[in-house]
Image 1 (tube, one colour):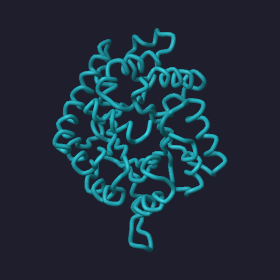
Image 2 (tube, helix red, strand yellow; image 1 turned 90 degrees about the vertical axis):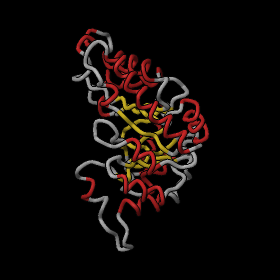
Image 3 (spheres, one colour; image 1 turned 30 degrees about the vertical axis):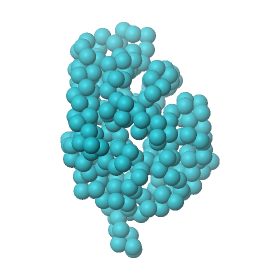
Length: 272
């Protein structure tokens, strides 16, 4: 899915919600454990309940690979089940020397056919380029995150007087266009989102941290929106674990509908 197609889906659904499928075998409702494939059954019902209200899904790969071969099988079935009008992101946070990155790209883009993959760019250009060489696919670069240790390195000042994450944003724009690359920007520091939008006016931002982690949807949207919306706001736990009972899918759908309703208002306000 290219940038124009993604924006068309955002306009059609009046939503820029990405549902994070952080599907933990220890947190899914207990009655699902009797299923042949509990993780897939959980994801299937979540997707059925939320697909009307979101434009993207983001499976966190750690929750699947931690289960070994059965987890990878659940992931593949989940990916195949996601509607084709939804953007798919492998939250794999890969990043290694070029030859290894090329194999990661082959795994997630050719074997599994995700639209995008999250990539750690701090090993430099050669670790990112292989993900950009497959037509129609995206690299989503981790640049400024909300975790407590993010300041250890991301906020180091360089000899140019910029933060390290700012240098990464500026350098990476020479590697690819906004049609191939997004940035991960944490939701909890709105002032940083404003600054990053000035550095990267045309790129999409994947923004985790709204919902359970405390990010404010309205503030983040006002800081980060651009002429093609330019935002995918990820919500994982607040949606998929809205209930731990047999009504979990209904609760997830209700939560997604409420986020979509707020996004619809913000989009109409921005594009009026």
